[in-house]
Amino acid sequence: MKLYSAPLSLFARKVEIALAEKGLPFERELVPFSQAEGYSPKHPAVEAANPKKQVPVLVDGDLTLFDSTVIFEYLEDAYPEPPLMPRDPKARARCRLMELTADEILLRPLVKLMYRTEPVHPDLERREQQALEGEQAERELLDLYRMVASKHEGPYLCGVFTTADIAMFMSVLYALRLGGPRLTSVPSLQAWHDAVGSRPAVAAVAAEVAEADRRLSRKA
Ligand SMILES: N[C@@H](CCC(=O)N[C@@H](CS)C(=O)NCC(=O)O)C(=O)O
Image (cartoon, rainbow, N blue to C red):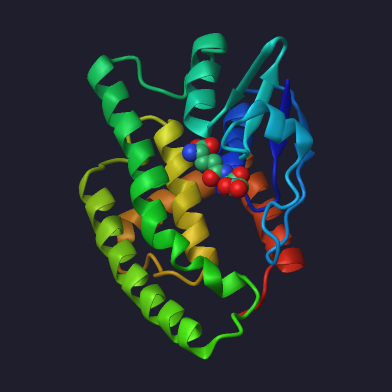
């Protein structure tokens, strides 16, 4: 299998964790990325495979897929052991909803924090607006953390370790690296984050993201 990933791609790193958790060997190609230019110029293989021109792209034999959620579903169908989704239909649906909450709902405030690692914007008014939006995003994230914490009991979001934990861990990790709210005021989420982060597959990706941050991101 071949995965097109990127050093600071939340979504591609999600897939790296799932592949490692399933014990699936893969070749990884990191596409070019910089804080100033983003993903420009696009990698030709990603451009050819994905009309959205985004990573992750996974190639498994004659199958080429994009979108981390579609890739998760394929991995679960094609390589069911060890499972990363519950078997019970309702538990499975809740797990998918939690992944969507991470990928789409937490993402909205999260993107408002991204200016913090990008080159400083030359326009003062824009910088002031970014700071205000950042503060608002922090408040929204804290509310969302409380909502997520209220929905889970036990070590993992859906009982057992699943794709929901991978997605949520990555969104929270990205919020933390962008200076978002600490988890100290939501102790059960802190305990969950520690438990997920101590899994070897997750810890390895988190360490690589931290290293990429040191290399590529503006320091606040
Ligand atoms: N919903 C997609 C989102 C993928 C995505 O946003 N990828 C980003 C990197 S994290 C990307 O390639 N951005 C480049 C662009 O949009 O031009 C997924 O889950 O894979």
